[in-house]
Every structure is written in C-alpha cells, then in structure tokens.
Image (cartoon, rainbow, N blue to C red):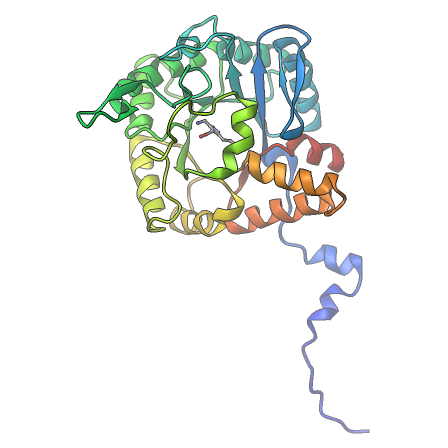
Length: 333
Ligand code: PBG
C-alpha cells in the first residue's frame, strides 16, 4: 500500500513514556541551587509559626543551630538570615553591634554547620523602629525620606559586623544608590577582599512582600518604599541600568526580585549578563498564595512548586531563594 506520510514529525513520540520523557528533560532543580530564608529572633526554644506563612518560623539561636545542621545534611545550597532584634531604634543599632542578633546568628550557623553557605540580608528595615531601610531625614519640602548617603555609612558598619562574625556572602537589599560600592570599599579596606556580594540589584516595590513584613516585623510605620525600590511599571530596561551600576561597583552575583511576576526581567538580565551568576527571590507573597490555595485543596503544592522553580530556572535564574528550599530537598532525598 502506498500512502503519503502527512505527519513525519510527531512531537508526542518524545513524550510517549516516562523513560523517554526523562531522557529529553533539559531543566532540573537541585537543592544545592536553592537558598532558604530564615528569620532569627531572641530567646531560647522559640519557634513561632508566621500566621501568613504556614511552615515558616521565627526561631531562636538554639533552634537555628538544629535547623542548619539538618539543612547541611540535606544538601541545601545555603541560608539567608534575617535578624529580628529585641529592641529597635531610629538607626537600627542592633544590626551594627557585634552582640546583635544577626552577628550572633551568623556565628551560630558557622559553628553548627560550617560547610553550609551562610548569607546575610544587609538592610535596616528589620532593625529600625520606623521600619524603613535606612535612617531618615526631612527633605526641604517637609517630606521625611530615607537618607541615602548616611545610610551607606550604616551599611558599611553592618557589613563589617557580619563579615567579622564569619558570614560567607552579604546580600544588600535596601536599594540605596551606591550601596555596593560602599560595602565593597569597607570590606576591602578591612581585609575581606574575598567576601562576595550578592546584590538585590533589581528589586521592585511589590505587594508580594506583604507576608515577609509579618515574618520580619518590618512593615514601614509610615509611607512605603517607593522612593527607593523600583516601579514595576517603569521602563523594563531600567533593570539593566541597575545591574550595570551594581556590577561596576563590584557586585559578584545579581538578584531579581520578586520572581514569578518578573520572569521577563530575569530573562532580560540573563541574556544581557550571561557571565554573571543570577538569582531570583521567590518571595513571601508568592509562597503564601500557593500555600493558601494548597491548604484549601485547590492546587497540588508540590507540583506547583516544581513548575514554578523550573520556570525560574528556564528564565535564566541559576540560583533561587525560596521558602520551599528545605521541603524540595527533603522530597528529592
Ligand atoms: C528587606 C527585605 C525584604 C524582603 C527581603 N529583604 C522586604 C522589603 O523590602 O520590604 C522581602 C522578602 C519576601 O517578601 O519574601 N529590605
């Protein structure tokens, strides 16, 4: 019988059984590329679940030590620490003290799990009484705003405190102009020339950070963060300008944040800076939305997580900060 083959190519041939599908799978998420954010507070034996983020906790140092030991054995890529001090003030002094919560948290992690990558979030919103990411000043117009250049000096102090405590990498998230250069200068001048900086270079003013502000107790007491974080409706290419500046000032790794609603930006940065390690932060609101739906039985949490993390990877993020890091690692074990 003679016939014309109308479909020489049938894409379904590469999907017809699980073994074939596995062979042609290109993207994979592995635990060593995932960073788990941890919220550290005072006290002992404290492990308090954050109401808007089920299965995410504020924890005291003793619990932190147990947690990082487990994370190291699970092969998670690292942790990023956020400190919640007992006392906040106008300038966030706790963050600049060697006895402050973040310095002690770093020492705890490095002692309990020396091989686990320990990153710190370098910012002031968790430490200031007003909840803004630096110290304040009154502009001639009467508006109170974050004082960029005075905050740079505070960031230098905070960075050195964390470096001296033994941190492996610092990640400034406050979106102050010149923050990378200021931190690089301070580190280099004090012998920390090898300490890498992961810049939250492209960080949008986002409602997706809502639950984090419960977790870190860092909601601004007045106004919002739009005079320093980026406008999501602004020219998309302004993301490249932010990256360019931070790279010129000495950033070693770059982050885009949030993740899911900004995968076009992740892709754009990846294509323009293929040589730079690129991270994206799968933020609190992204976590809480999935969690809420999953708890209602409306979506399958694990499958949503896998699909989302692969999407971020496909967009070009080699590193993902996610509250699911431990769960994913446990599942893969
Ligand atoms: C500190 C900081 C924030 C997040 C990370 N670092 C909060 C903010 O900028 O308001 C958000 C993380 C998340 O939502 O999971 N500046």
